[in-house]
Length: 118
Image 1: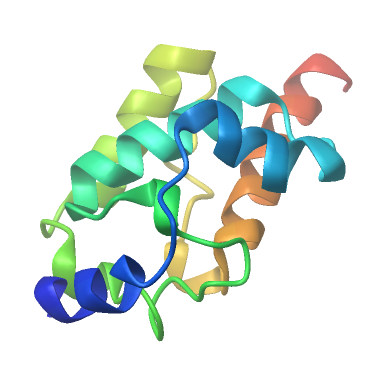
Image 2: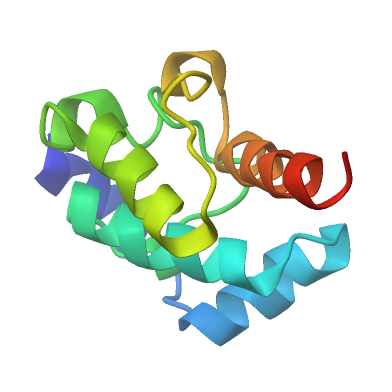
């Protein structure tokens, strides 16, 4: 499955983390640390080049994350987010409730905002 998704993504140009942020996330006011976190961590969990991923890519239908990430990637994601941002997502992060990559980044942005702006 991973090879199939990689073939699908290979048709797209690969952006570095700065370009990915500038093109997709800066215009919608996603903080750069969130963009960098997703770019790096999701590449590690999935084995995909996240510089080829678009905001509209669906997490399961297009990227098949539940099939290509290791079985406990959600736990690692929450732990890594806690280490990076000091926010525990373990009681509210459910990737099944998020449809697209943009939904994921917006969810993370709101978690960060809820701590900084109660």
